[in-house]
Image 1 (cartoon, helix red, strand yellow):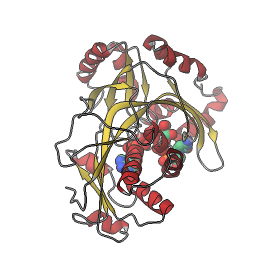
Image 2 (cartoon, rainbow, N blue to C red):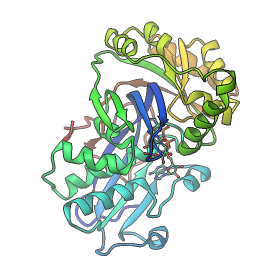
Image 3 (tube, protein in one colour):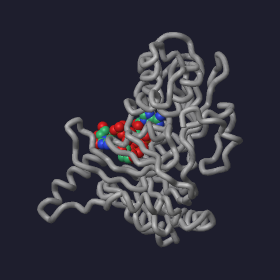
Length: 351
Ligand SMILES: C[C@@](CO)(OP(=O)(O)O)[C@H](O)COP(=O)(O)OP(=O)(O)OC[C@H]1O[C@@H](n2ccc(N)nc2=O)[C@H](O)[C@@H]1O
Ligand SMILES: Nc1ncnc2c1ncn2[C@@H]1O[C@H](COP(=O)(O)OP(=O)(O)O)[C@@H](O)[C@H]1O
């Protein structure tokens, strides 16, 4: 439980999926150039921050500290596996964001951060990045920083490639490492079923596997790459789920399936259950299925849940706004992901 010195600030941050993820070759800095279309879904983590005792903690202290000291803690109900998979030391992305922001504005990260996680861990839905974005926005509010949106986005990009999008939300075209964003016109809501697995996939391992597959594929012809992004943007603008379904694509999917062949069954099962199309989200292993409308998504989710091809399913929709300050009490019971929003999310300072 967070022990407050002054009122905590709570921010709600959405998960992302990639409707289009084209991966270029490896760059000299080890990253890959991307052309991606992000969409934020109504599956949220909540990040609460409160002023802690002064002093900068070491990673070791972070794992063992009690109430009120600087560091990170996990709130709400999580399985043992989920708890084990999220570090509460200085490698936590929310903590790294706090340190980056504190350094940028010349102060100590004298804060305690509480994370209430509903976004799957290492699932390709950028949960860690969402927490980093949430910490940035919450601390900008707690510290009453006079920082513009651009400045916050720049700090976000130093923490991880997906952090800027978690602040941005909506639907956006991402280039560079994925941190360079342009909003995409999207007035329509798309309905998704999200199939969560009981394990994660490491993002760098999946990028590495794609490099390996591309090298090995040279003898038998190049590994097929997804098409250009323009038709995807047109389908999004039209709001026609059937058009978008034909164009969903992810260059990392072959690598994720190579590392986790069971995903092939998951992808087939979603379409057999009535989805228009399915795709691996980012580096996986979460698979997302586009459906014609909300009731269809509920039916697909029910059938997929019984097919034994994933740990659990969620019905979701997008686009939704990026990180937002909410009037939240961090001690309240966790809200079910994909469920109704708890009140008005309030103004988004940075979008
Ligand atoms: C693949 C994507 C697609 O949106 O999402 P996830 O599946 O992780 O959610 C992202 O590009 C992940 O972004 P993010 O998870 O923030 O990655 P980072 O922390 O910046 O990088 C982790 C590692 O992934 C690899 N990486 C990441 C981004 C990129 N454009 N090229 C890369 O090669 C690098 O090996 C890097 O060291
Ligand atoms: N706040 C956080 N939440 C989840 N994972 C985190 C966090 N901070 C660091 N991590 C680490 O980042 C890895 C990737 O997490 P996540 O962002 O959930 O997945 P992905 O990159 O597949 O979208 C996790 O395996 C975990 O070790």
